[in-house]
Image (tube, rainbow, N blue to C red; front, side, top):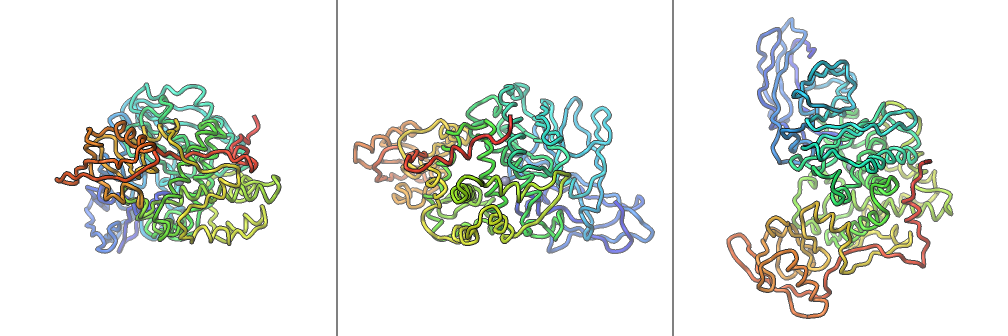
Length: 584
Ligand SMILES: [Zn+2]
C-alpha cells in the first residue's frame, strides 16, 4: 500500500458495520510481516488500541508490503467473527482480511482484491469483477467502504438463481450449501424470493444499489445470523432450510429483514452508527440509541414482507407476532430497563447469554420495534381513514431516486418530521413514551387496534413447533416458565417471576426426572397438561452442578402457548397490512 516516510499507523477494522459492536476478530490476525523495498519494517502494537499497529516508514520508501494470515474460527463467536467455513463452503468478509492506514478517508482509499478459491468451487458477491481465470478471481478496484460492505460466498455445492429486475436493476440469490441436496429448492419457493424483490420495490418505490445479491449459506456448521450490506446480505441458516418446510417457516423473515436493511440501515442510517463521521472509520465507537429504527423498523417490515411475498402465510405472521408480544409482555426486566437502554447497550447485549433474559432484557429493540412500528402503521391507517399507511412513510424516508449506494444519515427529529409529513400527530410523544417506559406490560396497541388480541391456550401451533424444532428447545415459557435445551435437558432460561423461578429453579440446572419418571419433553408436557385438572405440584429432580435437588413447582393451568385471536368488535387492519402491494 502507498505510504510516506516517517511515523505510520495501520488499523484493523474494529467496529463492524451492521454488527453494532467492536467485533473485529483481532485475535485471529496472525503472521503480520511488513516490508518496504524488501526490508523488514518493525511494527509495535498500540498499548491502548489493540487494533492499531505503529511503524516508521524508512526514508525514500513510497509503499509498504503488508502480509498476514487470518485464522478462520471454529464454531464460536457471533456474527462474522463466528465460524464461516466448512470443507464445502466459505464466506469471506474483507474487513477480516485487510488493514488500512489511519487518517485515510475510507471512500477515497482504493483496494484491488484477488481471490483464489478451491478448484471447481463457484462464488457470488456484489463486488464487481475485473476478470476470472480458472479458480482465480480479480475484482475491480473498490473503496475501503465498498470492500467492507461486499462479502463473497463460495462453495463446492453452489447455485445462483436470477430473481429478476425491479426498476431495471438485477437481483440474485446465491446459495452455498454443505450438500447438493440442500440446493433443491422448489420453483414455488424461488417464486416467493422473486416476489420479495417485487414487494420491496413496491414498498420503497426506489432502490440504492447497482445490483443486489443474497449470499445465502446453508450449513449446520457455520454461525447462524444475517448481516446486511448495501448491495448484498450475508444470510446463514441450517443446511436443510430450503428443503425442510419447518426450518424455512422458522427463519422465513430472515432474507426479507436483511433486504430491507439496504434501505433502512444502509441508505438511511442513524448518525451515531456512522463511525468517524464518515462511513467506514472503523475505529470510532458506534452509538446505538436509534437501533429501534435501524433494527426495529427493519424487523417490522421484514416480517410484513414475508407474507406479502408468500414466504410466510398470514397465520405464520400472526403466530410469530403472538410469540413476540408474549415474550415482551412477560419480561420482568422492562420494569427496570426502558427499551431505549437496550439499544444504547446493544454492544454488550449481543454477547450476553440466554440465562435470565426476562430479567436482563436482550436486544429487545428488534422485537419491540415490531410492536411499535405496527402501532404506528395502524395509527396512520386509522387517522388518515385508510388513505395513508406506513408504506407511504417508507417511500418518503427510504425511497427517493434510484441509484448506486448512497448514505443519508438521520436523527430522531428527522424520523418524527417524516412521520408528521405522512400523518400529523404527536409522534415525538408517542415514541418517547414507548422508549422510556418502565411499565410491566408491552405496548400491544398495534395488535389490539388492528382487530386482534393476545391470548393463550394449550395448543402448540405449527409455527411454534417449527421454532422449537429449529432452535432445538422445549419452550414452556408461559406455563412453568422454562426454556429447555433438547440435547441434554439443560434449562437454558427461567422466566423471572414465573412458577419455576419462584420454586427456586435456575438456568443451567439439568432436568433429570418429572414426578419420579425420567425427564423427556413429552413426560414434562404431559405433567403440565395434567395441572389443568389436578392440583398437585410438579416434582422435578434436577442436577445442579454436582448435586441433585428435588424442586416442587406450584403451577395450575395446563400447557400455555400464545396466539392472536380475532376481536370482531374492531376492523381487521392486520390482514390488510399483510396483503401483497406489488402489481402482478
Ligand atoms: Zn437487522
